[in-house]
Image (tube, rainbow, N blue to C red; front, side):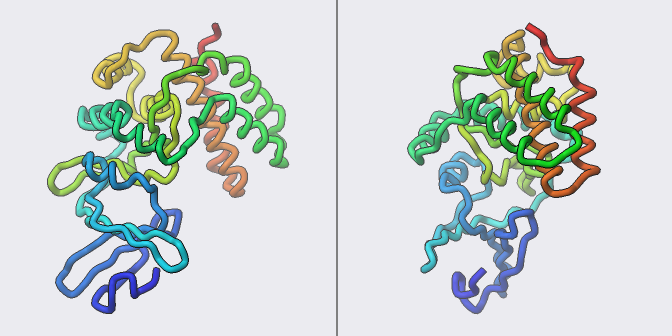
Length: 266
């Protein structure tokens, strides 16, 4: 990160994260900013809606890169247990039902992620990897192909696509934020709901949770949630396989095998 973005009075240091493009800027007056290179262009509307920490300014560099500065958030990430709190489902519902966020995302020229396209991506990735698990991957992609009709022609919303508990930040003012929107997509809300429910909400509480979110859990929604659970689990499995992270890929494989009894067979 170029020092001249802020001036000599500021100290800029890496803020961690997997992208390597996030920084903490501090000056002698103890002011702090969170800087990021080429973050999501619709950060401004997310800031205005109170979904991410306040956007302070945006600057375009000579090389064409865009730097955004947000208020540095003093707070902490939610624990897995805290993901069951009412504030989480309320914020998830607000995001999925926001026409402002949806319209801006569409004006950016974003194409909807259709389930068949997601499936083709997974099939191509599976074919490109040399793995002893070819039969396993074929079985999973076949399941997704057989059931893709359950998830076609669904209403699309802006999905965060990585609602891991580490992306939910509770500020010192007790305001809840959902950060890291770099992977956001226009997709079936079941994509986010699937990750949320399977990872953090006991099955016996799904109906209540979804009622708070604003929908009724029927067979159709359950089939969509399960389809995206399988698709995302396979996606994580393939990604870790690609990174040669075999312990983590094996974890996702076991998860897929263990949960097959839950799948609806229409």
